[in-house]
Length: 240
Length: 219
Image 1 (cartoon, rainbow over the protein chains, first blue to last red):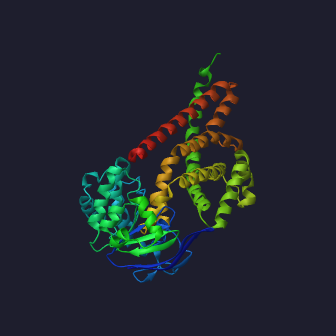
Image 2 (cartoon, each protein chain N blue to C red):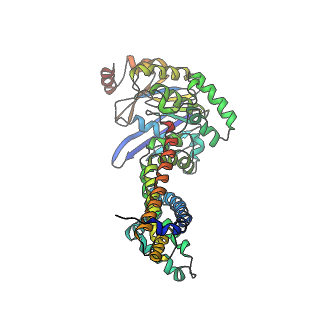
Image 3 (cartoon, one colour):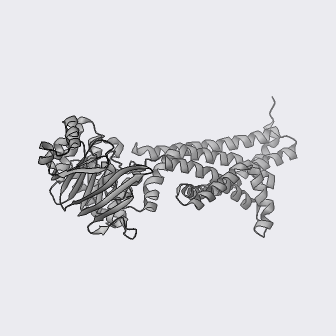
């Protein structure tokens, strides 16, 4: 589903990603973890080209997205993203947030888009908030709407960039529960997270980044019980 | 202070007839200024250096010289610029519109830059093309934030329109002056003109507040 080959990314002189190669299979749930500044968010943001890689290739469904000839807008329609700070459109209602891209980008009719949006809102328990503006929602509700907005495009892949880091502690669970319900339904998920419990329980694979290098790429069992690298051991000691 | 409105009472309707003339110039200029202002603002934030440069030079020229001078240049220069003598009202609307665009473009540019870049990223991540995202997501939010500054600009435009008097347009200002000349009473007609301008500005202010309330629904 996603094939990453020798990915480098520099911001000016600062090299954030120093050659990452890996493959994410269809339907897989991958937790990307690591200390802050390790490059994990940048790594994720390269996967839908919100960051332009300096070097290397990223293939999504066999299409090289770093190739200038690839229509990235088309690819992005099938790669959803959920942000740490939600980035809901504040001037649109919850329902409009969910229907905007399906109508404007995919060409769905308003009725179709709304029907689908209401179903999605039903799944995250926010049907009654459909006509509210985002500013009236709690953080947890906003993030559930943001996940629904990504799902409304019917993506094959969803990228989660620290989806619970901006939430009050009591709201983390409701968002993780929604993500849990998505996992292993066929959708491919790449999740940058600090929620070790969630990574351990839900992920099929853990990628541990440190200093722009993919230090470990293994199963959660192995990573959490017997990390191979010294850096991963130190990280886990601090986290757990 | 003794005011004698009685002596100019017959001339008041004549002054009032200047209102549509002033309003026409202001409305047309506001429309031109706003449309061109958006285009210039987009020129200023694009990565294309040539467009940045064009917009910056434009702004610096129109902000760097007096409005009355621009008005006279366009009116008296029109035979040399356009090959024909344009009407005074056209010259007024052009110079006010072009001048206003320079100021409005700065306001809009600041408004766009103030929007969290996450908004554009969220749109991009959904596969929304840049132009669409600018039009549907960024500009509506920017407009909401800059509305007070825009209303301010339109108020300035309304008041400054009084200088069209120098190229002979019989707007509110000139009419009150003419009445003064005919009756040898300047204070009253000009005071009356002041009242008209003040009322127009108040109407604009209230209109702005009403639009703002409407736009703040999402807060």
